[in-house]
Length: 195
Figure 1 (cartoon, rainbow, N blue to C red):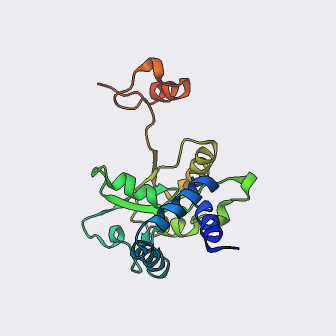
Figure 2: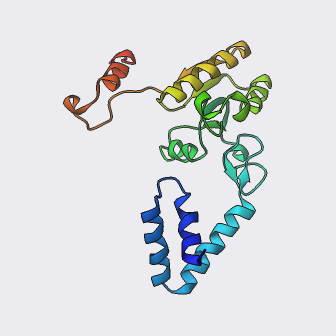
């Protein structure tokens, strides 16, 4: 196999990158100065060598604990559970959440062979047993698998006596009702609040 074919195959393994896009990426790199490809390779090597899941929450970190877990200004009584580490960044960018996180590393999907044992659930339960968490915010996706994961987490966490909440769902800011799907409108109606 040629070097071009091998790199194309590696790129096409990335999510959202098909064979044609992978080949375009390879040819783009070949048209650039060789130092750019070397910098990319070095950055990939550094990530592979230095970044690991935080031993406490599962977020990615270069240390044993991530920046969020080591931040003394965080509220340890609130714990937000997300499916993947990149979702921590999405919530952090809002600047409106000051609690801690727990990354599951996926969501329940029996058809794909993903059960509770394949997720980062046991460490979550250990954190709940410590007794400092008062509210568990379940921030899983609105997919069937995300909802199943949320129900499982609720059933599993309920015996620990914590308040369990779910992220609100509804109509995106700036959208018109006529263009919003029915299930989103139904979620928005169910989650309505006083003005």
